[in-house]
Length: 223
Image (cartoon, rainbow, N blue to C red; front, side, top):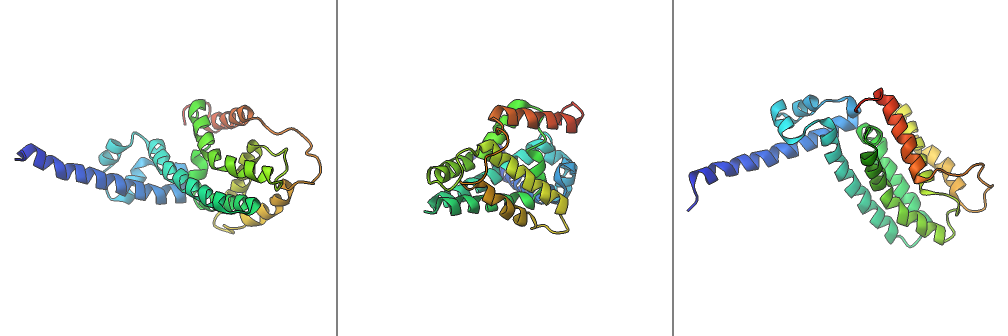
């Protein structure tokens, strides 16, 4: 026999799960449009739930943004698997670059959250997760002689940053113009080009540079 307390608890659990999904759905839209300037209150309003409900599920907007980001990483991982299934290593890599930029170019919050952490350990984890899908694709393309051997994963990370800067600048005016600049950049990844004028960043240098920028943007305090 089911007790009264157990019976009354079940709808609350269902409501809690529903409210969480409403918040996540609203956050996808709000953060994509407004970036991290949006507050948890804004997301709660969009979701049609109380502010207290939002704070019971997420401590702050960064925690909610991270939950949304987890979904994006899962999508990127699926795209990477599809790209690896392409027998043409170069086509698979370029296809993945395009799909990753498709996600980032229309999502201001996704672009910003990767640059918002003032915790270097968390920042390193975010960078590792972002770059993980690239690794197998780049290594395969290099092994096939389709990508120059002196290109590093940090180069790909910064290439993405460059394209996201274009997306930021042209948002609302020419939202797909980043594709033009990707087309300009791709030949430079191919073997046979001129020697690169300087060494690429190491993973540690990339993390340090990004962390310094995070601190500068936040005024040295927590994001």
